[in-house]
Length: 137
Image (cartoon, rainbow, N blue to C red; front, side):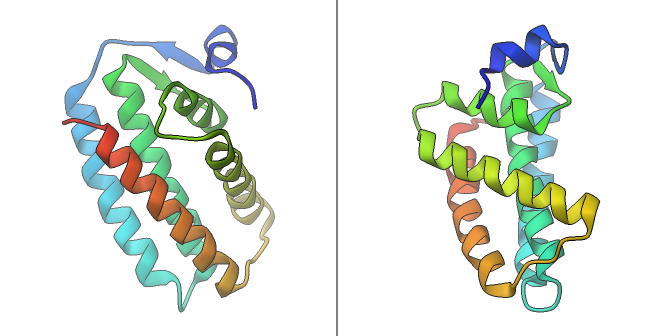
């Protein structure tokens, strides 16, 4: 996994002003998206996984906004989380694996079994909770 500074150098992340209003909006949106994802597990597991993952990315975007950054890379978002003691290397590697799964689902039409999606969403729920506890808006 690359370091966050790499993404800044590559212009995949820009330094911006701290944006508390954006962070608040992303936190609200993330909660709605995660709640929606959970409702989709039984009928549309592929979209449940995509939405649960996106909900986590929205929270990382909120955390970035609170630190004066704007990212155009999900890899950068995950790398940014290395700066927070709440997230272990193993958790970030797993989150990056889910990023790749979401990418294969969204762009290559790969489907996942409900049981696998449920395991990943349980993990994403933990990450989502940790992010919410890290964000103070």
